[in-house]
Length: 197
Image (cartoon, rainbow, N blue to C red; front, side, top):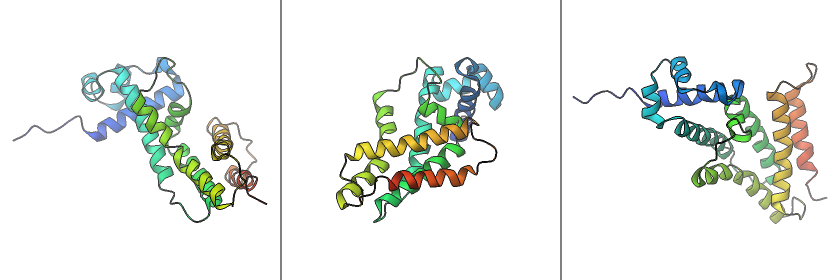
């Protein structure tokens, strides 16, 4: 009878989620393999078995963050209205950030200053920009968006959502502001500014 696997994917995900939480709340000094293993209720040998050590853990965390983010953006099915697709991608962006705030910093901050993703991880991260860029290209091509470089449109739209999401995640929103409504209106206004008149 084969030995049961104790270091399974569920443990791997728990370790990655807790590692992201430690990094996002305490910075790089908060992430030690011994502390991580203890907080997840496993051994450091499990961490080494799954990731090979701290560099492998950090690399896996980076890839997992972009995998989840990319999956949420890819779930936005392109329609015949590219401008509306951009708004829906903006909503998916915020949904992803709120679902995994501990991974947002891993993707767009520098929680471990000496970490540099490898080429494959960079390609996977860059691929998460493609749905937005595709919508901008389609909008320019069909004439619903202004005749400007699609990269410029996509980057400007991304900048709006990123800035608003960072304010929300960092708790920098006044208590009396209905942030969900404000976010949606800002998204819509930003996209409307790129529409061809």
